Image (cartoon, rainbow, N blue to C red):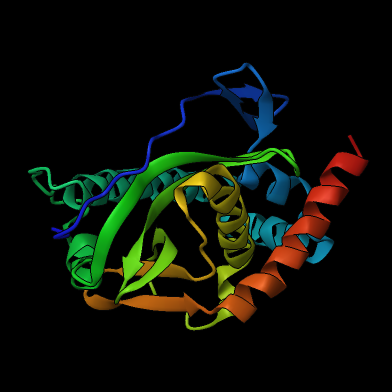
Length: 226
């Protein structure tokens, strides 16, 4: 477990769904669309067609089963990582053990944990999200995101909108916790893969700036067509 845990104050939020979209409601009652809602609503046509073609190829029932199982698996591994990062004892279930074995060595390089599964809001751009982790990786403060997969991604293209999601979280965390001296311009995305070392994608400040510009365009498009 991390040697240094210095948690920031956490923001409270309620989750609500409306017309298939997810929103976070803050303590003042203000409603913000989630990062994933904005990304899904503004997904490029090529990405929509690729998803449609995949569902057609494997069949609706199989596609729903794959999606559901992946979601449950992701939730379980996130909960286990959360307990680990907070120094809590937890028993790893047999279902997620292969993914835990893959990602655990990377977690040994995580220190100075400041936020785990925490809500962040960006009041200017009007969006919110739930961040997996704000901590330091090999001594560098960053946003951390944990994912699972059955085979390696191998390229940034296979991460789809995940880099934009990380940039969005960076922007929201920086605004939320500005008074605490938080200024994050790096991000870490780790993909846990059974029987293989986890894939590590590390984003430098110039990467975050690039994805942040793309993210702002997606936010603008989201509000434009509402």
